[in-house]
Amino acid sequence: MSTTPRLQRCAHPGTLPQGDGHDERSQYRDDGLAIMREGLPAALIGDVRRHLDGLLATLTPGQRPEELIEPHARAADWRFWLELCRHPVVLAAVARAMGTSELLLIMSHLIVKPAQDGKAVAWHQDITYWPSVHGTEVGTVWLAIDDVDPGNGCMQVIPRSHAERERMQKIETDGRDLLKVRVAVTPEQERLAVPCTLTAGHFTIHDAFAIHGSAANRSARRRAGYTMRYADASAVQVDLDQHWVPVYYILGDGSRFRPGMRDLRAGQALPASPT
Ligand SMILES: O=C(O)CCC(=O)C(=O)O
Image (cartoon, rainbow, N blue to C red; front, side):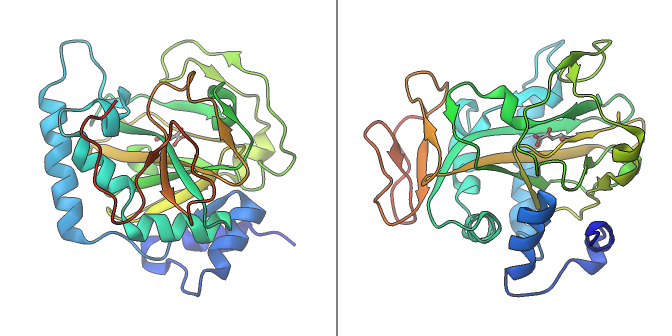
């Protein structure tokens, strides 16, 4: 049975799926992509935009806005981004989609494609980028900060490309895209790709093996998104010495907390320092 029509339907903001979480779990498990039915409040997204504008104002000449890496650990306003990563709506959605109640926050990245000259992100699988992450159950939240659609280079995901759990070879690109490498995708796969059209505040979750990417932004509209990456703490070990940012134990009953992690479950104070 093809699941593509369901995803295409869900990819439009007016028709985000309704349900009790079962849909999200089955979409994520079967398709490698879940489009969440509940978004973040508009007032919070207004704050996110203000914080983002503040970061963009500090970019030095030559620094690309697609490369605002780990703001929850590196930005002057890291507290804001870290709190966003443990927003209860986000955590509940990730737990439902991934089918776990034990979560680590392992990374985050603001990918901002400015109007007219936003870079493409070539087809890739996230799982091949993190040598310190041992295990495969990692999901990425892609939170829309602006309204995003194919016109301004929204993310596209190839449904069910995660299913074989196969790590594909990276091939060099011409270097004009963000990653400068890609994986080989057939025309048939490309035809099936689902555009993640989202209203600001809504978000998707994709599996670390799912092939995804996005086109350059040549439109007059900015395309900003915040990716927050979560590992299932019951299935993934992170090498804390090798990992470049702190690992936060962000949801769970305490059984998967390990020395060296930071406990950031609901009710825990933010750390004194981001690193
Ligand atoms: O923002 C994009 O277009 C790509 C995002 C991405 O590659 C990721 O979230 O892993």
